[in-house]
Image (cartoon, rainbow, N blue to C red; front, side, top):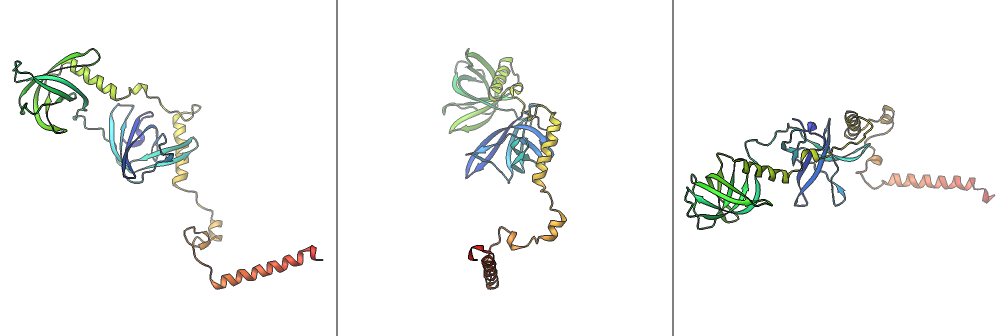
Length: 292
């Protein structure tokens, strides 16, 4: 997929750095044009943003619901007949996030678990995050769990405090804010747990059908709107050439028309200006009827 194929109404996140501060800019795709993706304008303290260097961009495409992460080449403001917008350019094709990597959702909920079927020695834990492939828990410093141990985890979650019971296998040990944690995989996913992951996903993302599309001109089709915006952007990217007559008359290297060139007048130029000023004064005196 190329960037101009992103659907109207798709969510766009731009991760950038301004003045040494990391910021996240949120905007919305309008439609793709020949030069890239047109998005709603973004301002930072009243000024339009402009990123001439590669920036990290994340787009949740409304058409297929998949998340695309890529590096943009430039993000610049553009002026069209419909107003000011931003144009995101990307030279490479967009690839969706690795589908094998399950998205994690943080819940931070208290729970209990047993190790290798020993239900008489229940241990406390914190359910750190969940995904469609498993979950991770935070332990206390006295509890030891090694990869391969079977863990039966229980916790309550939701407005009805529904009880979730999950059989998992420990696969790795790691640390979370200085506390020991265990990542667990789930071989047989039950319906309750799948429903919980779905609820967390809906909480994180706006439902695709609830995201409105942007129509710049309801009187014409989107295809016609794209053609008009393409024309406006092309005029900015490729300025109109001067006529041959203008080129022959004016010298492009004349210091008088180069804004970045500044120098003092020579002695000859100063005397010439003084002589012309004296001649102009003499002519003015001859034509002055008040002296007659």
